[in-house]
Image 1 (cartoon, one colour):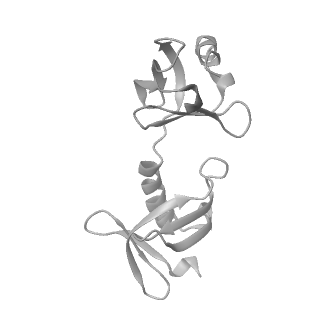
Image 2 (cartoon, one colour; image 1 turned 180 degrees about the vertical axis):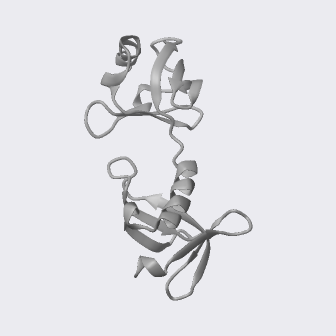
Length: 157
């Protein structure tokens, strides 16, 4: 299917409206990355409200700028995952524990329910931390954290 004949816009309710080359319209489509961490720019599906794929996109960069912008806006809301830049303090080294952290979006706190909620990603230095509140926090590179933050984190790894 030719991407040049695809249209994507927001409807009156702010939902994405996809018009395919055959003229069919699909309201409320949702972009979903196939590999959000390992290859965020490759393999993206636009799913209809019924959960079925309406359009497969090999590479996000291949889309026209207007389509790419709408999809990236929607993904930013769907994939909200602040990056931890510093661990200020931890309430204790047994779980559950409350962490005071600084992120790329400001200072906050998270509750770590169990050590298993810290997952290593591709490589040994990337982490994903699931808080009890349901927010996923990223650490892009544990080596880039300050010494104090690394020492606190090592107690849980």
